Image (cartoon, rainbow, N blue to C red; front, side, top):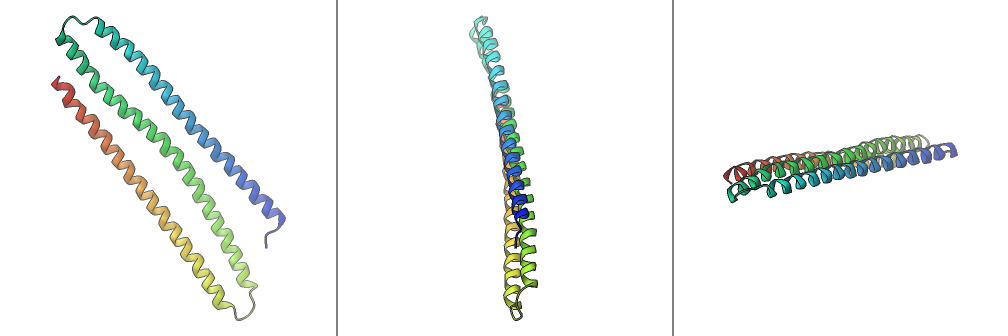
Length: 180
């Protein structure tokens, strides 16, 4: 049976976790806002520079060269922006996952303690029921671990695919920019 002190301690720990995760979420939002402001300032400056360059063009050949010279850096900057955005999102997700895994492990320990305590105090002849309950808890823990491993693998595959697509997109622009 849980004592009042245990319930209060559990509630306090849950509130601290909630506030910690809320702070991490706000940090992620702040990083995204900062990234967007930096990217917007840079884009505005580049548009101004490009407009000045276009106004100083003397012929069509020079205009084509100027336009093709813009294509490559734009693709690279877009890929870099996407990468920063992905890094912020994956960092925030990692914090949430780490906290969830810690909380799940703690909850499993506490629950197993309750099961063990109940088993010790169970009446004679209930050994089979206790064994079935322990088996069910073990199966649930194994399932949770399998799901966590699958999510980690899916995340790693998604990151690998993201990196491959980013590299392919950046490399595809290079020949197109050179042809112009």
